[in-house]
Length: 102
Image (cartoon, rainbow, N blue to C red; front, side):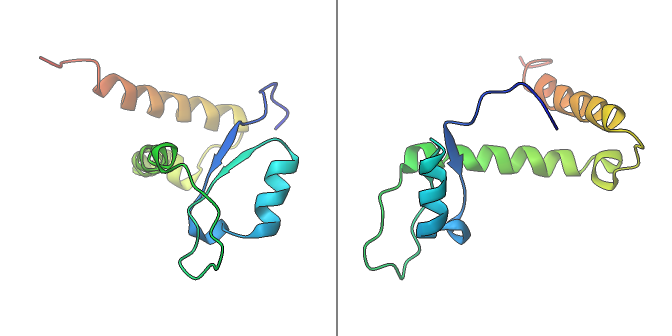
């Protein structure tokens, strides 16, 4: 997709992406890798665990969106209609936290 968005400042990933070549590639592109080191590394790189906690919120959001059958199965024929229903599902998630809260 050719969308006019700025490049990300950081990449939140799990231990499966902990590799020197992957980290170097991210740094060359100006992206900060926020990846916890594997337990078997001799010289583990530092990780910003305060920033890494945001990954849980992202994973929960994707889990909620996958509960929407139309989004999980990809019934839509065009990218525009898929993106539209993705926006509707995200709005439903957002509205839950702001509406009917007493």
